[in-house]
Length: 472
Ligand SMILES: Cc1cc2nc3c(=O)[nH]c(=O)nc-3n(C[C@H](O)[C@H](O)[C@H](O)COP(=O)(O)OP(=O)(O)OC[C@H]3O[C@@H](n4cnc5c(N)ncnc54)[C@H](O)[C@@H]3O)c2cc1C
Image (cartoon, rainbow, N blue to C red; front, side):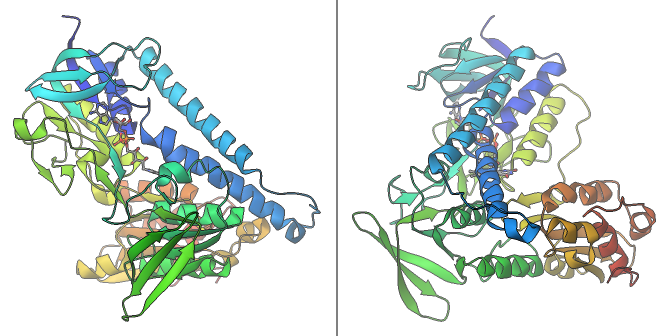
């Protein structure tokens, strides 16, 4: 029964490979089916290569500001081929690392395009992409449990479909042959603003067009407003409440018609357009309809333990719905593996999933925004602390940031935390732990924060919610 498994994961992204490793740790016979790249989008064409590009941009930014630090840097510039080469090298290293981990945990990798043919049956068809060493070949496989971990792909708007040349998705934007002189970015979610930061720092003239009234639409309005001011100060142009209604392609540029909510229409010409209007789940050609697996708005419907409506079929990660984040996919992989192994798995609480955006300044958040907390009927105590009051932030040359904390006035429960500023993506986990431990303001106030660290802004924000901030 070589082709028979306890569990087969379709897709080797953060959901699939983490779930597979956990299932193997629990003693199950596990296989992962992959058609393109081991590790999925995150290490190959997502989180990691994007952060590698942004690191080059950040270092360039600091060299540009060397004088502010009493340093002299006279001859420097951008070698975009070198920047991309570094990013692609890191992506390959991460993908190989995932391959190594799967092998170490005795997870079989099966190479090809998978579809469910009957309950417990998967057919794997050959693909053009060369198989990694040691991968099993296409054919028919069976498993007691099948986990759909097929991820997502860029959403395309009708009439503005990416063409890889003039209209890019994140794939082209992550590996440019040259830096476009001007760039239009459609969508101001995490992916859109991260590319805005990268390309602006690399020298492009960047314009963001966002349909909603606020950039970074899922973030707290005050934090998004703070970030917007910083972006505009850097020279990024931003149009909100604005829709790209038409794009005309030239020989080496695009002209977009942009309609704003006040009824005005303008045309903008740029060398390239990045379409960053979200992603859609890979639910097609998997045999889901025939099996009766429920889907909704491009995603598989699951419960808190990642079970679909069909026994033995599970779904995790991007394909199982928002938030479409790597750490959510990984966590769901573990939940599904433990539930399949008959362990007491804890259901996912989506409110506890942090979000991080690596633009300049960085954004990080967890829990309810102020607007959502009010909407939910809570009486609030809101704390705010600016980076300018923090010695370490000022010493770093990063005095522009804000930490906002939101408490239930009645119980002192921390409902949400929203940060903008340097390195806040490394700070947010403190608040995530606090929320998971059901901490109240009292414990946070009594905790000792090390000095000098930027983390002291977190403490001060909590103090501020209770009228006790010291350095403000
Ligand atoms: C530019 C960019 C930056 C990002 N930055 C961040 C970030 O900073 N933080 C964060 O948390 N998230 C980030 N993300 C999102 C993150 O990459 C995804 O949430 C994550 O990769 C989802 O993991 P997954 O396992 O659900 O799916 P994926 O990573 O998409 O993996 C799915 C895999 O399934 C394979 N597959 C699909 N269908 C089949 C089939 N039928 N047969 C066989 N194989 C199949 C695909 O080839 C793919 O390898 C970013 C995404 C992008 C594009």
